[in-house]
Image (cartoon, rainbow, N blue to C red):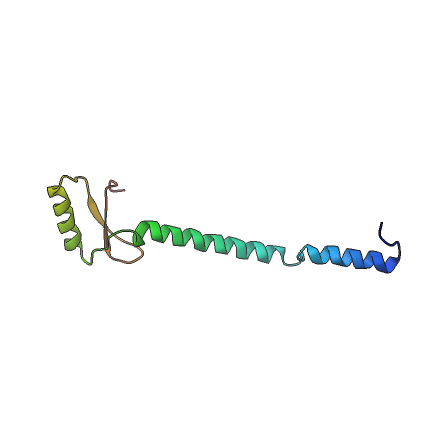
Length: 96
């Protein structure tokens, strides 16, 4: 059992509060954590929606690739302008 002296109790209380990481900046830490999560989520969207796909410089190049795919049996493709790189990508998803 610890000491009952007032100074020892105050020291234990101070150590306990220090171990909490300080609740003074709780909302700031939570905001930074959420901002970090938003950044990771956006990076994942960019990787999935742009960086993993073939990029075509012009719409004509993308449509030529669609024609070549159709010759090999792949149908239902269309091209779209990428919001990240402003190039052109192919997709099989219907027009929204």
